[in-house]
Image (cartoon, rainbow, N blue to C red; front, side):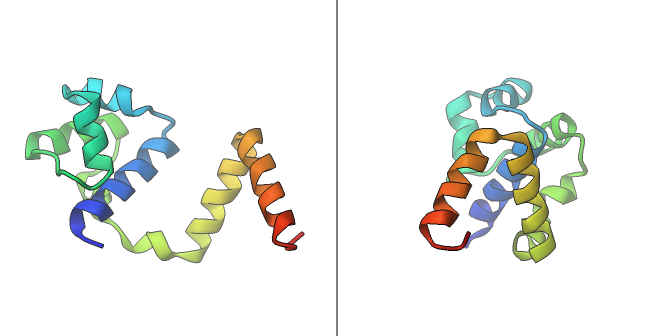
Length: 105
């Protein structure tokens, strides 16, 4: 996976954890939503001045946007899933049905 894809995946992860929409991010940065979507999809990379705006909107250090090693960390994955299941009944139902169809529960 190249750096733009990793960056986009990390950005999406942080944005959704902060419960922000792509539209709100684009508005805060001052770019079109389509351009923001391209960043999260790993098709383009933000300008340096927009990296600063992104970190300010998300209230994080710029360096956190480039911390990719956690993506494969088991505890992080489990905590992320649990947090999502607790906040989103629809996702919980879909996950339950999926696991049941696999015979896992």
